Image (cartoon, rainbow, N blue to C red; front, side, top):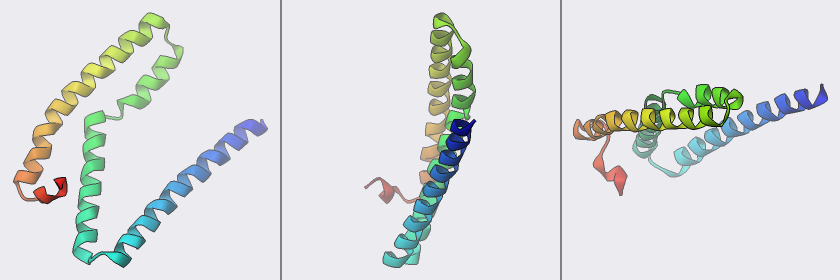
Length: 112
């Protein structure tokens, strides 16, 4: 019983730490960079997050749960299906990412 509570508490603490670190990063960027660069960072960051969410389709959550109860052949089939899904999703997302830069929504200078 205590291990379950400790696990839940550790999960809450880790989530809180990641949120606090994100807040600290934004505050430091706001302190040392001009407002336009902080805004550009925000646009780039959210674009990457949305892109990863759309490309991954949050399928990893489902496949991890299914893999726990699957046998050896079921796990390999699940892994193969996940690989195919990710390849197709990334092939579809790549033109959208390029279109984002071509449309001028994000500058090409973000690539260095």
